[in-house]
Image 1 (cartoon, rainbow, N blue to C red):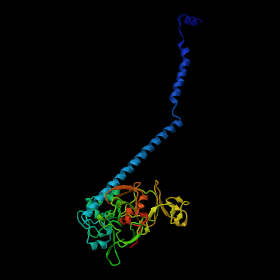
Image 2 (image 1 turned 45 degrees about the horizontal axis):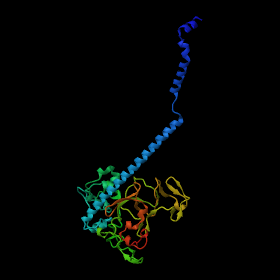
Image 3 (image 1 turned 135 degrees about the horizontal axis):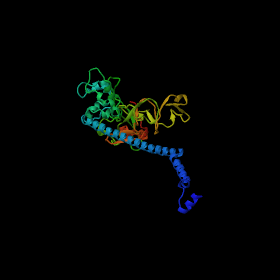
Image 4 (image 1 turned 90 degrees about the vertical axis):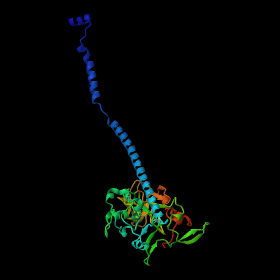
Amino acid sequence: MQAILHQLAFGTKDTHSMTRPTDQHHARSNRHARVRGFTIVEILVVVGIITALMGLILAGLQAAGRTTRRTEELSTLRQLHLAWVSYSASNNDYVMPGYLDETAQAQWKVRYRYQVSGRVDPAICQTYPWRLVPYLGWGFEPILGYQLDDNDNIPSKGKTGVIEPEAMEVADQPWFGYNAYYVGGWWETNASGNAQCRFSNSTWAQDNGSGTAIPTKGKLVLRTIGRAAQGSSLILFGGSTFRAPGIYREDSKFLNGSPWITPHILADQMIWNPYTGMIGGVDTASSSLIGDVLTGPASLLNAPLTLGAGGIDMEVFAAQAIPYRRHGSVSVVHLDGNTAGEGIGTLTDQSRWINAAHDGLGNPNEFTHSQD
């Protein structure tokens, strides 16, 4: 009673009893604020946003990488073209032969030497690289730039009777293939023991201008630059790799190159074509994939199928060096030096490969000629 009167008289409060409930409320609120974290939904949203951003960044980096690599390929093709032109200038306008077997080299009395000393063995001079390297200033990057880890081991001088693996690699696995059958020519020993250019005596149907065929012999292989009908479209070098018969999708960028490249019809034989869902006339729509092998009807078993990121599939009918999409398109350089990334479909135009096909009768995609 005295305490109550004292409070009424002097206005004092029992601070301990009056403030305790409020302090406890704030304490509970602070503890609740401290223990509250992100909910599962919030975490998933954040992770989703980060993943989406990383996907966009990665796609951009991959696209930039492909563009950079494609630009590098086109730059390399320009170097090959300049060297090829220099070769012709040194040989009375005759273009570099695509293939010379050992007998042809002997009959032509041509020898190829290493940069320092020693003769390059004729066995590895049948394809173009060792003919062109001197005109590249003995730089091997335009030849093997896609796999130059061992470039320092490429020999600069030879040993009699010895073919070093690095020298063989230059001959057999260059970055780009040469249009060897129809530019410069494929020279082999005939039955008489003489070097003869393949298709030099082949016959074909020339258009007289009104749709009537003129039986024509030869004129298929371009031997001099001056005879080129369409230098801006005739393919000189292009991405190439050797393939066994089968069906292939987008290729790995790590496959070995080939020293020549072949049009989809060689003479009168189909070599490759965009895949249409048929193999030898058999519909593959009901077939299935097990690993890398297309399975289905007995005629399709073990047909190799390289899986990838899409693009036009290719069917290969005969083992040959075919156009190769190392970075999404086939990098090519034309006779006049212009470069481009080509799609498989556009390369079925035979006039892109064969000088005479511009004058052929009918659809240039179907241009053919006799074997010889």
